[in-house]
Image (cartoon, rainbow, N blue to C red; front, side, top):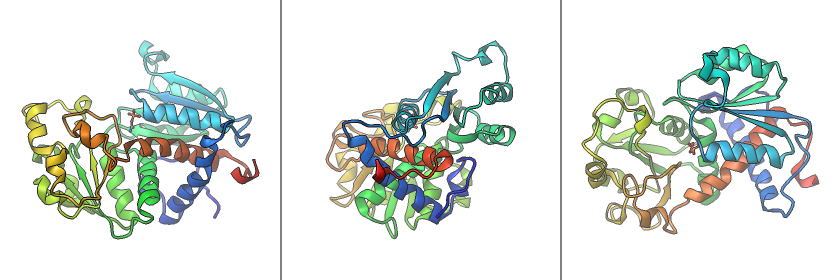
Length: 312
Ligand code: CP
C-alpha cells in the first residue's frame, strides 16, 4: 500500500491497514539496528527537528537514533534552550523552525493539542511525541509491535492497563490502539485515577486489581503522572502500592505466562515491583528496542523515497 499522510498526530487517525503497514515496515527496519554498521542512506539529505518541551529519555533518544540510522540530519531543541523562555510563542517558534526548511518536526509538549495546532500552521510533517494527557501515538505503535511480535496477533487477547488512567496519554492511545486491532481492554486503578469519560471508550472498568488480572494475557502498569496532578488523588505512594503495585502477590492471580509491559519511566516499588519489572515475563526493554524501529518506519514512510531495507 501507499502511505499518504503528512502528519502522525493520533492513533485513531490510522486505519488497521495503515497500522499493519507501519508495523510491517518497522519489522523490516529492525534488522538494521543489529548490523555492525547501523546506517542506511534512506533519508540522506533530509532534516529532522526534535522539539521536546517536556522531559523524555526513550522517545527523544529513539527518534534521534532512528533518524541517524536512516542518515537524516537531526537537530534537537529543548524548551529551556529555546527562545520560548524569552516569551516567544509556540506558533512563532514553529514558524521560525519551519523557515529553516526541515522535513519533519517531532514535538512533545505538555499542552494537549499542541502538535495538532502546529501541524495546521506549517508545511513540514509533524509527529506527535506526546501531548499532555491526550495522545502518544508512537508509543501505541511500538506497543502494538511488541504485542504482535510476542503473541503473533492481538485478536482476542485480554489486555489490562493498571494505574493512573486519567492523566496518561499512553493509556488513551493504547486503549484505542489495542481495541482497534482486536484485543479486549480492561482498565483498573483507584477511582480518582479513572476518568469519567472512560464510559465513552471501548473498555471494561474494574477498581479491583485481582478481578482485573484473572483472565489477563497482558498487563501494562502505568506510572502515576505526578507532573499532571494538582489535586489530592491518593494518600501516598506507599498506600497506592498496597492496592495497585504489580508485584508477585498480585500476579499470583494472573495466568502463569502473563506478559508484563510498561511504557516507562518505571517507579520501582510504586506501580511495579523490581522482581516483576526484571522478570522473564517482562517485555519492557523490548518495547524500548521496538521504539527505534517504529520511529524509523514512521520517518521513512513520511519522507522516504523508494528505498528498500533489503537492498542495503
Ligand atoms: N514512554 C515514554 O514516552 O518515555 P519517555 O518519557 O522517556 O520518552
